[in-house]
Length: 336
Image (cartoon, rainbow, N blue to C red; front, side):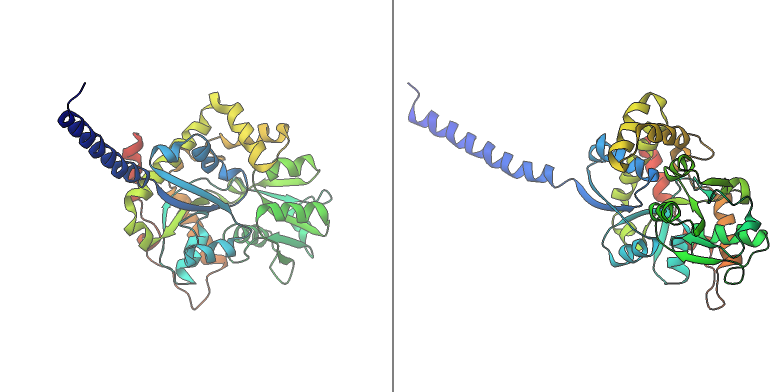
């Protein structure tokens, strides 16, 4: 039989170990950094869906919550108000937040060149046929709306004089507006709605990159103060995002990626498969490693200056818009 002294020592040791475990467990649980991410409910959200589903964010000690936005304006307002920390959208929205709303925003990665096509109703044969018609847009003062205005201007049509702009919101709403009301003559659509639009009889007048040249469209942007205070977490997030893009672009993962598109976007399998095949085309789908396109960004700024910049607003220096050192740190984590 064990001596009382021996039992006392064992009990004391067990108690100490229990206390150590009780202290250590919460510390490990606290390591996961919570990040709220906001994006549009379209195929461009696939890397975030993948990052969550495949545990890529969790592997880097991040607890990522994804929410969808209905419009560019609501996304910009939400980011400025701190309702989420990272926005994925057309980067012209970040530029507008800096130039017009005077928010301290910074762009931290690229994403894609837009995946955009200019769709019209079946009876329209050319841009000239849009005279007197209605064009549906999201925010009328940024991004793809400016691309639409530029295209129409190139074809001799001026906003307010030759055509009307109707603000309806995100691409899902532009698609619905064109399907449900034939008086909505045209709009810029992207995946998966370009595939669905073609299936429903709408007609493409061309891809935006083909029509207007290189364009830095979607990417990630954040409030600069949050990035400064959470630089390590932001680098880990971008690293996991890049890993998700690599996973998507590996065609061995096609079936799983298609299943995620079906689950998250409620797509028919045929539409989801076609969408995936277009997402992995490097020039028109996801940019490999979400790399920032400097030439495309310069073209985007030039387009904004031509179409939208108002006399009371001024362009900031390029470094005011973009800080890629977080992305560079992420790429070191990933391995090039």
